Amino acid sequence: MTKRKKEKRAVHYSYRFAILAAAFVLVFLGSFVVGRYAVSPGSLLKILISRLMELVSFGKWSLVQTWTQREELVVLSIRFPRIVCAALVGAALSAAGVSYQGMFKNPMVSPDLMGASTGAGFGAALAILLSLGYLGITVSAFAFGLVAVLLAYCVSRFSRFKASMALILAGVMISSLFSACTSFVKLVADTTEQLPAITYWLMGSLSSVKMVDLKFAFWPILVGAVPLVLLRWRMNLLTLSEAEARSMGIHTGRLRLVVILCATLMTSASVAVSGMIGWVGLVIPHFCRMIFGYDYRRLIPASLLMGGTFLMIVDDIARNIAASEIPLGILTSFVGAPVFIYLILRGGLASED
Amino acid sequence: MRIEVKDLRFSYGGAEVLHGISFAAGAGDVVAVLGPNGVGKSTLFRCLLGFLRPRSGQILLDGKNIRSMDHQELARQIAYIPQSAAPAFNYTVLDSVLMGMTSQIGVFSSPTAAHREKAMEALESLGIAHLANRGCGRISGGEKQMMLLARALVQDAKILIMDEPTASLDYGNSFRVMRRIETLGEAGYTVIFSTHEPNQAFRYASRVLALRDGRLLADGRPAEVLHEDTLSALYGIGVAVRCAEVDGMNYSISIPKGEK
Image 1 (cartoon, rainbow over the protein chains, first blue to last red):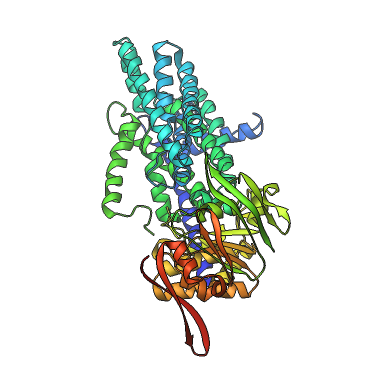
Image 2 (image 1 turned 135 degrees about the horizontal axis):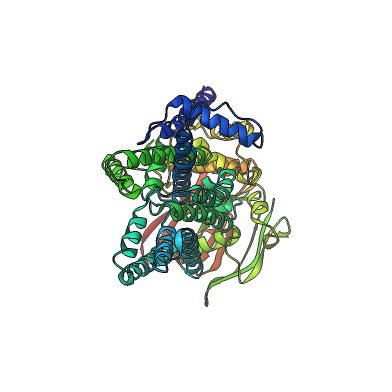
């Protein structure tokens, strides 16, 4: 009887995955249609299919053009990078979040616990201060995100605390150090142009995303995501105590380092192109656990898909709700905080089944 | 499988905690480790599991030093059953047991139907198969201990190290868990468990190691080596040991009398 029950559960989850994947595709396509400049769904599909055929055939095949040049420009050059970026950043932040939560054995941990965001924020602020230009900001943010986490990791290695506790403490310290640095940069920045630019960047937005950002974000996020997807069952072991995991034959130190590297690559790349977008890495993993259970075999793919879907929706709202764009970080907080309060009031976040 | 400990010494920083421990245990031995709090029981276990590097001395498994084994190889020989703690995440009982098979599953792989079958068999043999899909935060202490036991059994190790297996269990569940440990011994496992209850050593163990100040005070059959003065010296209180006959079986029992 129990065996049949188990099989039934498996089917259940694949159903849910199908629904989630369908939602992802629908939101992805739907995001092209919403916006100030109307694009009909028919033209949209034709533009996308035609472009895909061109890519596959190296420019030999395409559909007969029945859409306007303007529609193509809006779809391919403006909305495409932005929507793909939203999906990438959402997926990256929530997968990094779910990984960190397992590793720190704590469902309240967010992917920037070890300083990835504050490091990146400082990198961006510094680049704006030095007028390094658009690409310079992205690169600098990415680099300082990595530097912050590596610093925290090195500090934790010399600590006599237990590994996960040492990482948390070191992360908190390095984070506050970098946010102090950011405050200092703001203090000395020129108040007419640089300070608003820094402030706006820190609030998180995808409004200025171009194809070049997409390329910049894509590779680090892919490189970070692949090991997590491959190691996804093993990550369950990190939620056990150090002694238990080791007695089962796991090299906890190595596995932890891999997870930190991957999550940091993904978070830094995300923050570098989109600025600071909070809550995604905290709230989406919770929903994933509610729907898909606790096994990382399902949690990693589920959080990638759900995070991507969520941020595409939030970005759709950000570019349509008001006359001027609302920074994403503000919107995700408006969504995330009440959801979290609800979860706290319901009690027993992680023990809920 | 035979585990042999030779003149094991361990120190944290400058302070030596274990001062030359030697013992050996083979298939079928159920070894109780007795000793007051902070005497080095946990340190001894952590050395046996390869977590801590002894300052000197050797730990041999069938003559092979555990220092020359990697994590995976060691995991196939020795399983560890911790004191049950509240898990951070509410995995199902089946998923928790599957984690015990890590050393048999490739780094990039997940458990297959065969692994699940084996886990179910282990749960069935311990009488908790009906809990397979229950969250492990929603089962009783006794059931949790059985789940941890199942997880250790699927690891296919022949030596089981248990840290106070009946801590925080009620009278009935303590008996069920200990009785299970006894049958594991009969099935050829080597079980090494720590306990604070001398009566458990009398009742279930075939061997007892009494540890005091990092040294072995006694090593042998519980009824033969756990004398009143040994227990008194061990815990610093007056202890009486009596014999009781129940249904034709003789049991030794210890009773604390008072301060010495």
